[in-house]
Length: 279
Image (tube, rainbow, N blue to C red; front, top):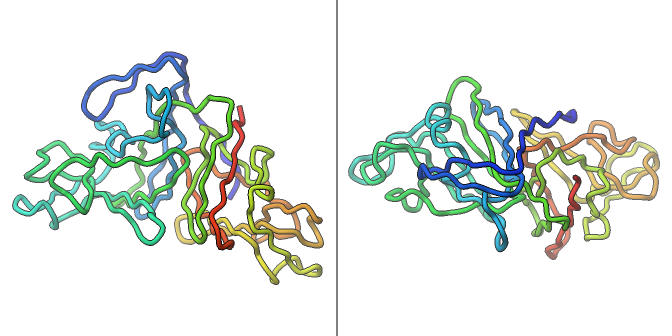
């Protein structure tokens, strides 16, 4: 995965349209990032706060993830049963990992929510969902279209001068940066080792095998690019992230703004990763 340049527009006083048609004005920096959706699975991260955020839980309602007019034009809208509110065609879906499986949301119309497409939870398709996604978390968006499209992620830029804390559970975690920027894996913003990331020790001869330590998996459209957190004969005794395809050097790769990764924690207990503000 090559480092991608971030395209972000920001202003100090801005208004963003919400799904209900209202406009929220923020005195803080507001920005946006256009994300290209390929047919099939797309791994996306939430790198923004809710516009107008002043404290409390940093999250955005699923209904406010995308501009509603753009979503209706560029996403596949499902039509659910006029009687039960399920079935027929689900449209594009959002899948949010919950530690053991997924919470699923359909972008659709139906008898209960009306003719304007909204996101509904698979567990209750009779109402537009009020569920939220926390800052720094990732999710799948399955695009049913046959061609690429774009959607715009937008929100308030985290700008508080304090580190973002990622709670990492044993096993798989889908995360992205807690800030509105690309996130190089070996950037000084991260304190992987001191926060408890499991360090692998690769072969002193080949630089592979033995114990990979914690891993990061980046979806590339057909599979994953894999990174190990480790030491080895080539990179030295200070643990770094290396690409599975070249374990002899610390990777220069980044997680682009708007993208998520799988973080696999090999430890038996949760850890808290600290990500310092990069700007």
